Length: 285
Image (cartoon, rainbow, N blue to C red; front, side, top):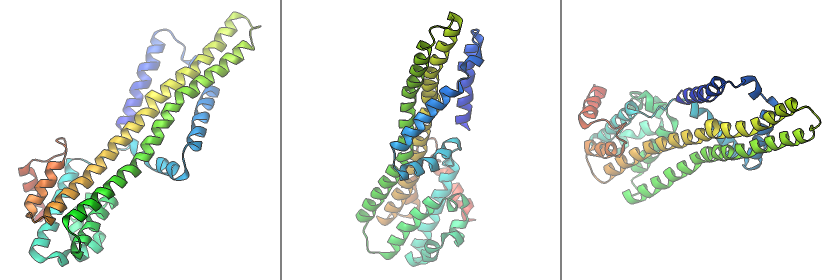
C-alpha cells in the first residue's frame, strides 16, 4: 500500500509541478518513447538473467505491493508457540511432539497460532529442526551450523529478485537516452520543417530521457529496496527461531530460551517481557 502511495506522491509532485509552471501534459505523452524504453529494458532483463531468476523475480515482485505480515503480533504468536513446544518437551519428553512435527497442519499446538501455521516456510523451518532434536543425534554446534547455512541460502535465494529489479532500474536511464538519441536523429532528418515543428520534435526526443530517469529512480529502483527490506524481515524470523531452539538445546528452561529469541528482535517489533508473559498465559488458557 505504501508503494502505491509513494507512486501517487511522485506523479503528483512531478507532473503537478510541471503543469503549475505552465507545461502542457499532453506533450509528455509519447507512447512510442515508452515502447522503446520499456521494450529495450525488458529485452535486456530477459537476456541478462536465467530462467530461474526470471521466475523468482516474477514470483516475488507482487510482494513489494503487499503489506508486511511480519509485525509485533506475529512475533508474539511465534514466541508463544515456541514456548509451548519447549514446555511440552520439558514435561513430556521429545517424543511427545513427534505428531505435531510430522503433521503441523492438523496439530492442535500449531492450530492455536494460525498466523504461524499458515506460513509454510516458518512452519517447515521449525519442524525440520525439532525433528533433528527428536532424533537426538546432533549436538547444538552442528544444529547451529546447519541453521546458519540454511538461513544464508534463504537470504541468497531471496536476494535474486531484488538484484534483478535493481539491474532493471539501472538500465532504464540508458534506454531513455537511446530513445532520446533516436528522437534527435529523427529531428535532424527533418531540418527542412519550420522551427515550430522542429521544436515539437526536439521536445519529443527529450521526453525519452525524462521517462527513463523517472521510471528508474521513481518507480523501478525503489522496488528493489522494498524487496530487500522484506527479505531482511523474513530472515529475522528464522534467526529468532534459531536462537530460541539453540538456547533450549543448550539446556535453558523454555522461559529463558524464549527470552533469548525476544532479544534478537528489532525494537519496533519486540514485545516487552511482561507483554509476552501475559500473552503466553492467555494463549495457554
